[in-house]
Amino acid sequence: MVKMKFNYVQMEMNGETDHRMNGNHSAFGLKGSTDTDTNQSSYEMLEDSDEEEMVLTNELILDPFCDPDNPKTISFNDVSAAAYKIKGGVEKTPCNLSQMSKQYDMKLYFKKDFLQYTGSFKERGARYVLQQLSEEQARKGVIAASAGNHALALSYHGHLLDIPVTVVMPIVAPMMKVEACRLYGANVVVFGKDFGESKQYAMQLSKKKGLLYVNGYDHPHILAGQGTMGLEIIEQVPQIDACIIPVGGGGLIAGSAVALKNLKPSVQIIGVESERSTGFQEAMRTGHPVYTPVGQTLADGLAVPVVGCNALATAEPLIDRMITVKESHIALAILRLIEQEKAVVEGAGATGLAAIIQGLVPELKGKSVVVALCGGNIDTTALGRVIERGLAAEGRLVRFGVTVSDRPGGIAELTKRIADLGVSIKDILHERAWLQTDVFSVTVRCVVETRDMAHAKALEKEMRKFYEHVEFWLDQ
Ligand SMILES: Cc1ncc(COP(=O)(O)O)c(C=O)c1O
Image (cartoon, rainbow, N blue to C red; front, side, top):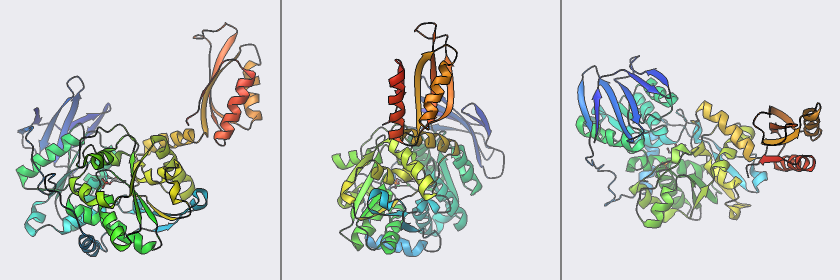
């Protein structure tokens, strides 16, 4: 049992102090710390200036809309009803032919749901859930646990529809997203060391305050709302042969597959997960959602340890194939989308293209393929690192070390050899003191820009031709 006392107004994260009670948007402020030894969290929180002691219990509060013993499937009618209801409230995003079609030998269309107002498809389901509330529930409001896109979508549409929204976000949620939810007028509670703790606490608050808990990937109305993306796709690309959809908890693929397969049964539905979060494939294998540990992934939107039971029951019979992509290919996909499509897409939203880049769908050559680019909320600092990771994965940013003579001209000779190959040096550092070799040698570490992997390999060959000690780090 984790005990919390609600009486504090500052929060420390990553060494920075965040004054969370400043401004009118916040009804709660808190102090969070994670005890790494015991792996337990403790928080102090202030609610409307009332001091009250609260306890995060281990009591299992069930979500009546997501009962693993009695999963609900949604129908085409549900998706159609959602489309009718949310029309005008969310964007009908473009789904156009990509310049990359030739490169991958297929007619490649991108469904650009990252262009929604809050940057993801999550608005579809969020708006529909809110529109379906009873008058009384709409007055009381809703609550959700989310580290990102679902929280943003619910906060924004709650604001538009004048429905109170509380979002519980884990302390690891990006600061930008926490602040955005506040700006949309939501009651933001930052609580929990991970999504599991946030959800447990949100369930507890929902019971205590009579708020409806909205599971972001499994509430039946969420599934129906997300399905409207599938309806739009088939209207925009009627010749579609296959649709590649990122999978987290499974809401997007479930709703969209219902729409697509009903209108065109021949469409191949392909789900994608990161190699670091394979919960949906595990659930399909075992027949029910199972806890599957998730690792650090660029596709943080897909990192769901226990997928949705309704999503699984709805999607499982409609999915033709599930595939797993590598983190390095997700980075590469983000980079290619920026460079070639002028599109800023977050890791989760880029996994569909990552599958194509990784060569995992050779059967789609020559076909009309729609890839859902379903979110664009990538942290700006993360984006910089991802671009570098993507450049490294493509062999366009290379790190190597080479031991050269410490005589005058030794380093000049090295840089000339690099320049003669048309390689550009970004960083160069030479080390003398820690060398194990003779005192007349120096190790030079370089980060260089190359055109592609072949160019990087030509550089490696050239270095090995002239120098005995060469270390190369090529990301392949
Ligand atoms: C950008 C993005 N893509 C895909 C997904 C996966 O959606 P679902 O959880 O409905 O499977 C998410 C979930 O948050 C997301 O944010």
